[in-house]
Image (tube, rainbow, N blue to C red; front, side):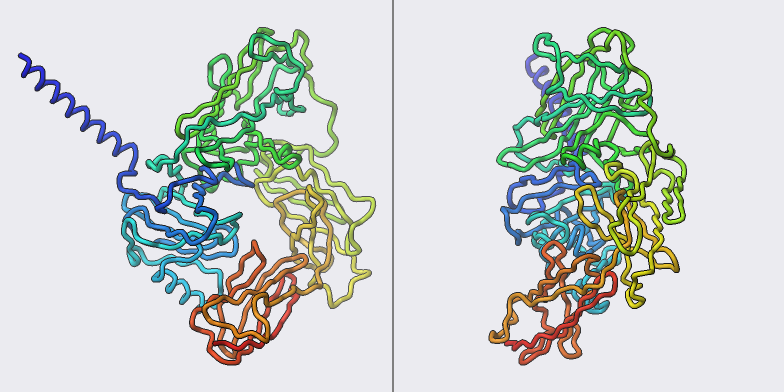
Length: 572
C-alpha cells in the first residue's frame, strides 16, 4: 500500500516538474540567452523609463565608469544591421536570432575585428563616417557568447555604458529584456515623491493641487481633499532604485485605484517606436518644461495612442457623483515585485464650480484638423494630429524685433508639446541685407530657457520657410561665421606616432557642423565625429603614411560657412 502511494506521488511530482519546466521555457526564453557582459548587470537606465520625447527602449548597463568592457552576443544568430553615427546610438550592432528576436548593442567603443574591418571598408568606399550596413541574411553568423565589440560612450551618450535591447524581429517593437530572465539585484522599494490632483472642466485642465501641501483634513493616516470640481485625474512623480545602484530608474508598473477599482495602469513590458513621442501627452509636459519634474498622468488626451498605457473607463479621469469620501490608491512597483503604496481620500464639495473658465483668447484649433494661421508677415501650418488635444492657438508679433532681417513672432506656447512638425514661413526684410549674405539667412527660435536654437530654412524671393517641432519665439537671423578648428594633441615640434589618435577640436557658433574631411596628399582619411565632445578624431588605420605629412582639413556648417586648415606633422 505504501509503495503504491509512493509511486503515485513520484508520478505526480514528475508530471508537475515537467509542466513547470515547459511553463518556464514558454514564459521566458532566457534559457538560451547569456549576459551581454561578464560583469554583474547594474542598471543606470531602465526599460520604458521616461526620457526626453521618448520612452527608453532598452536597459542601460553600467560598465564600472569606463569604456572597453567586452560585449558578447547573447545567443546564436547573424548580424542584420550595423550603424555608425555621431548621434543617437553611436556605434550600434543588431543581431537577429532564430527565436524571433533581435538583440541590440549600442554606444559601443568599437566592434569586433571582423565587423570593424567591414565597417571601415564601407566608410572609406563612401568617404563618410556616418554608415549604415544591412548585411545579407546569414552572411555574418555569430555564436552564443562570442565577442562582438567593446562598450563605449559613442553617440548621444551621457557617460560610458552599454545600451542593450531585445526587439521583436517582425514588428521591431522593443521588449523589456528583464522578461527574458536577466537578473538585477533589487530589494529596494520604488519611491513616490509627489502626487497631484488635476481638476478638470469638460476638456480643460485647471491648476493642479499638490497632495503633499494642499490644505486638508485628517482621517487616520489618510489625508482628505475636498474638491471644488467633480471631475479630475491624478499625476504621480517618483523613481526606483536597485541594490548598490544610485541611479534613478523608472517604475516598472504604476497602478491607480478608486475605491479599490483600477482606473489607470502603466506597465513597462514593451513599447512601439512609432508611439514614442506620445510620452509628451502622458506626462505633465508644462510642469516638465518649467521644473524638470515628470508627472505620469492618468488622463488620456484625445491624440494619445501609446501602447503601454491602459486608461480603462473615462479616459483615466474620475467624476464624483456624490459628496461621500472616496479612496485613491497609488501603487508603484519595480520588476522584482517591490512595491510602494500611497493612500489618500477625496470628496466633492457640496457646491462645486463646474463651469468653464473665463474665455481664452486665441483661435480654437482642433487636434484632428489641419490648422492654418496667416498674415502678411507670417504663415503657420499645423498638420492634423499634431496637437494632443484641442488648443486656443495664438501668434503674437513682438513689439521689438530681435532681428534686423524680420519681425519677431511668439508662436503659441513653448510649454505645449507637438507630435508632428509644423511649417513656418516668415517674410524677410531685405533693406539691411548684404546681397552676398542671402544664403546665410535662417530661421532661429528662442526656446523656453531663453536659448537660441537653429531651425534652418529654405530661402524664397520674399520669405524663409522651415519646419519646427517646438513652439517659441521665431525670427530670421544670419550665420556668416565659419566653424573653428584646432589640433589638440600634436605640436609641430613633436613626432606623431601611429599608435595614438589625432584629435581636432571643432565648434560652430550657430547652425552646427554639416560636413568635414581630411586629406594627407591625395589620401582621404576617416575622421570620426563626436558631437558630445565636439571633436574629430583620426584613429590609426594604416592609411596615413610615415614621414613628413601635410594634413588638409575642411569643416563646413549648415549655412555653407567653411574653414580650411593645413597641419604639418612628422609621422613615425
